[in-house]
Each structure stands twice: as C-alpha cells, then as structure tokens.
Length: 154
Image (cartoon, rainbow, N blue to C red):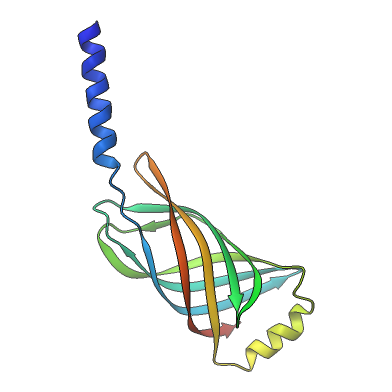
C-alpha cells in the first residue's frame, strides 16, 4: 500500500511539474473598440485585441481585473463578459466582450460619449491582471498597455 501511495504521489508531482510551466500571455495591441451600449454607469464594449499565447496548450481567460484610462483619466473597471479561449502557440486577434463599470467621478457620461463620437481614436490605457487557466493550473498575468485606439460608437 505504501508503494502505491508513493507511485501516486510521484505521478501527481510529475503531472503538476509538467503543467506548471505556464508562460505569460501578452496583450499585443487593441485593434478596435466599439461601444455597443450604455446603461446607467455601465457600458458594453466589443474590443478586437491581438493576443500572444506562447503556451503549448490553449489558455482559457476566466477573469479580467483592469482599470481603463482614457486620455489619462481613470474611467472605470472592465469585466470580461464570457470566458475567452486562446489557441495554443498563437498570436492572433480575438473579439472580446467587456462590461465597463464607469467610475462615479465620471460625471456626465452622455456628454463624454458625444465628445468621443467626434474623435477617430482615443488614447486608451489598460492596467491590471488577467486570470488564465491551462488544464488544472490557474495563473494571473499582468496587463499594461497604452496606445491610440480606433473607436466606434454604435
């Protein structure tokens, strides 16, 4: 019985060691952002994002905890609307649906939306973490990107 327990423990350690080498997934760039809807202090966004997954297995993105800054002003936090599956060994674009919980400090959302409609692009910064899962291993990846992004309000 002791031998069986030792073998099981070695198999478990080997399995965890093989799965434990999860490399960071990186957000390469925002290609497009669409504002689909405003409801109260929440906006629905569809973002086309290029993401690099260097891992040999798919990564399932389960959670996003990031602040969004527009032109240097803290705008709110984004939440992933649904899990996102990143293909193994890929560097490709994905359409991702987010909910943006707008800060109370943003006083007039509709005036801000009208001013955004007049622009072709905005300076967008995302800072936070993304939680990914590969098999039984979960890991938080840091995210920090700042760039000018084409914006569409529909």
